Image 1: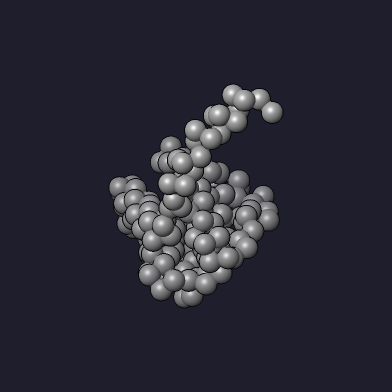
Image 2: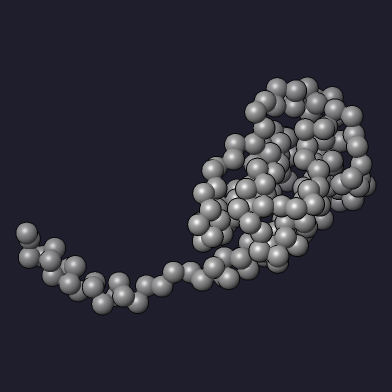
Amino acid sequence: MHWGTLCGFLWLWPYLFYVQAVPIQKVQDDTKTLIKTIVTRINDISHTQSVSSKQKVTGLDFIPGLHPILTLSKMDQTLAVYQQILTSMPSRNMIQISNDLENLRDLLHVLAFSKSCHLPWASGLETLDSLGGVLEASGYSTEVVALSRLQGSLQDMLWQLDLSPGC
């Protein structure tokens, strides 16, 4: 063994005892803050106020609606679908929201891990072949409906996080 390596390790030893894990309440607070940030970003896009999240639009049934009881797994699956939809849209506004959704999914995985839940990484929709055609035919409507429903889903998630959702 090299003495330099051993001395370096022994020098770091006291600091290793002072490293603390991030409290799970901090992670939950960060998750709620990020949700509120995403909702604010959606509100800043002016045309999203024109459609109700409960409204049915033909051809856009693949966009998730509201769910009454959300588990961490269902939240992750829902966010994966929205992330997949938003990255397919040409609007520059969608890039930041999609990145925020990725970060939100990471925080949900940390929360799940803290509850000893095995949360598989959701991949979104199996096939979005029809999305390209829908975006060509009605990109504006798709964006409005997707953002409106995402906003409703995020508000449901915010409420569910206060109830300490299950796996």
